[in-house]
Image (cartoon, rainbow, N blue to C red):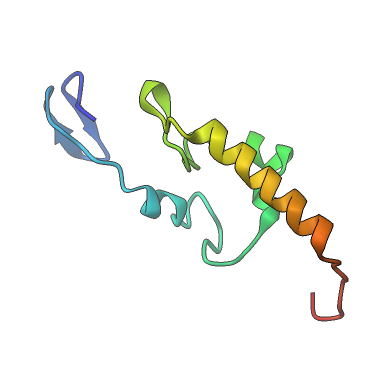
Length: 97
């Protein structure tokens, strides 16, 4: 990406025209945005949880006009894969889950 105007973000100065990269891994593991970021917690993605955080806190496919061209395909593909897994296997809850 390229900075479109001079600005200061968190004390750092960026001049117009400067090329920048976003570290998505660090964003997705930031404890200020995600308490216990290394812990598996599907509840982070409920409708209620999504409302309480910035829409830019989770960017698996990027954002804006240059987001991932394969986003819709990937989301459709994961649904199909999950459907095939659920058809083939049975799942049970155990005392450890």
